[in-house]
Length: 152
Image (cartoon, rainbow, N blue to C red; front, side, top):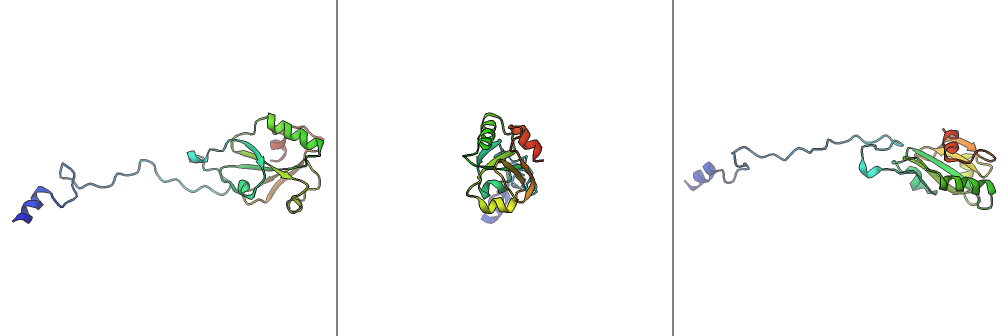
């Protein structure tokens, strides 16, 4: 008899006040598809990628938030390199783009991999670090726009 009373009162059942079964609320945000490698997950607010100029690292190259990655083979003794660096620092690297400074003198394996033979060379790479386009900026216009345009 007690069991019957409990059942009729709704005890032991998963019900809301109206007697309807409760179900977990559906997520307000639908699941998003995984981004294609090298494609920024544009809808992911955690993946905002402000343009940057920073030192080279393999992790920076693989950062999925950046759709444009350009290696800058720089030597501190090179006046052309210093000119490009000044232009990059005083300019604006657009969102989603990164220019990674590579030490020309010590990164011999990276130079060989990308067939870089002179400092002030810029190499656009894909997220796997493979060369897409090489541009020697030596003696050329020193601006972020020139770097981006000539490495497309």
